[in-house]
Image (cartoon, rainbow over all chains, first blue to last red; front, side, top):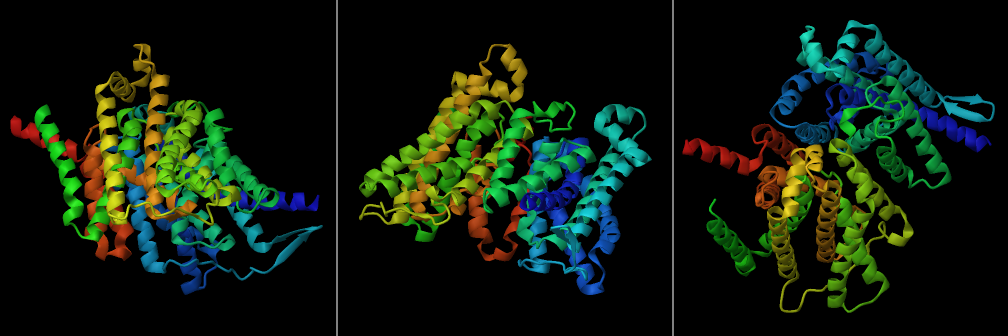
Length: 292
Length: 314
């Protein structure tokens, strides 16, 4: 029984991080219909920035998050307005898939050149503190990671549903043409969306950095995980990302615990493929034309 | 291009490739071998991705299935090397095609990006299973005997194997394109719902095409496994295989016949010969190349050539 509960708890903690890491990906997919293969590398850039902040400035990774988000917001905005938009204009959406893949390769190479190919990890000052909940144990690092993830997802939901930026982003997602007729500068909104998504991806990277070790070649995994989360939960909404992420975290830990430590990835993709066939909209997704 | 001229040019190209090993250095034969393998894979992908417009991001699954079918056949039944090679290659193609037939109906109901990701997911599942299930020996690796006859150096032997496969794939692609199936696929690519309404049996055509494409890729995978001699799950289930097939087709020109071959030739030459000196920057240069390609030549090199000819003709 204890094993079951502990696995459940670990799964939820991992799932919280997955949710946050996927929220930005889901936003871009939902608003622009662009599958952003750069997503994983942006998450990693966030992790490396948090590592640098701690290493060179002695700043706690969670306190570095606002700075990372501001930096990546502008980078994401510029990236969308230059490369992604021209790819979308010139040819198909599948071509934007290839462009983002190319950018991911370039950035991965740059990360290797700057930081080296080895695994890095961030060790905050509270790394070795544990909290006991009856027979269950959870360390401070995971607890703060889960807390930060949930707080940031709530922040994203607030931005999307309670601010003017969020309103125009949602309007553009519904129908870009009609939004344009109502005076929304659609291209600017696309840039904003990309900026917001990149900011949250970077924040996710900082959180991931304190829980798991990371290296430049991991980026593909984070992109795929984001995709799995979106397919499970549904495109475009923070709630979908949260549900999908928590489910994926549970699938991961339960598979590792009860089937074998080598199988979480296979199980994840199996669920992904089955889900695509049974309900491509995701659990919380609305009917989405692109899937059929 | 005039039809007789095209046939003469293609014949000359095949002849040139046929005599190349007599002049070239062993390293260049290896590069040629890689080019021919890439051309087979790109042609196999392109039957589905280029003609029908169904972009698969997981075709490496079929390379892996072919390789493991051949490897496990050799492991369990000690056939004489040459017989094992031929039987293994055929089995590789069959297993790939059979698996494709099994999954074809459900995955082909998905379209666009969802189809692409479903196949990517499928290839990852198969790769992880090959790696982690002991019966497949993907983590330990499988060893295959040397099958090159004594008269030929191994790299020359496999060069000719891949050349034969490439010519066969090209002929298959040419046949498909000019057949009723090819016109049906083009209709599916342009507008599937309309095609279906006009009486094109879209489901059947898509399934046939996926099975052919997978079978071809499986054959190539089996021969590739033999050319390696020893392989693990990681050396045949490779995301960059899936990606290169797309890039080569895109570089040459989607929907054209010679596009995938031209794209494969150019990209293999650039990455292996020109970039050989820049190992640290390999990913960076490849990435920049991909970006430039999509932004500057979205219809591929043949698209650029066509535009140039039209401008000159005017």
